Image (cartoon, rainbow over all chains, first blue to last red; front, side):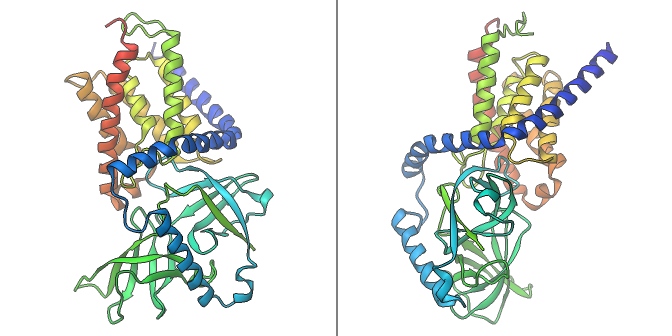
Length: 239
Length: 158
């Protein structure tokens, strides 16, 4: 009886491995189903959010448009290659699905190597607001790592005075290594200063500043001009 | 396989169970039910509730369906193996807890959520314990809701 039970368990595990392997051949179809479902459920989600929850300041469509325009102006001012900024080629892609568990901040998009996407490419909203980076590329889709995925550290600059800081990604991304003597205020723009991204790409704004007297540096929380759950389309930079 | 004197689960119930698990896993790949950046583990919650109504063979098939529809990208991920171990462990433990079934559902859901991350991504447990606790609470609410719904759908013989 016991042997029979063990055989059953091993048979199931073997079946599971085979099933998981087979299912990976249908990931694109499954992701498209998720995307279609999220589109269908979006009106309900928007209606519930409007009634039940207060929208955070800056999250309305008009406010997002304002943030995009401000980011584009800032990027133009910071870019070393102003003549090529508008000439940068972007591929627009739909967000297929989000990682099903809370420990990662990954999304899949419907553009892959066939569309010219390469690993490490910046992922943006309209070319100016940085959302993340392409992590894995497959033939017809890609996996994007967002700033809500833990374990990613990105050098950034704060505001027009180019104050240095380090963005530590995670469920609640934060700015670290802010020197105590520099003046940082809530609302200051945060933009990328990493070799992986074009200089001056807006990430967000400083939200709250934490001043621990015993620490060598200050930390701050960061607010993003978008809600990841509300965006359906991103633009991937093609180099 | 499908008709048991204790639960009265028929083939129709099994197909309904498959549909619910698949739909839950697909929704889990969206941000539809995300509240304050916390996404509920619908597959885990649904499977834990269903463990009280389905026999082992049907339940294992539901677990497989959940895994297939949860798959996010090609390749091996430990968290998905941890998910399978968690829900199968729940099935084994479900009748060993004292108390009423819906209370056991709550306890099992909380334990399974913690065990899932302990086995699949232990670092997440100690770097974001508040997030795990919030998810635990959310999963428990979903499990209890689904348990009572499953009782109405599947418990014909009770």
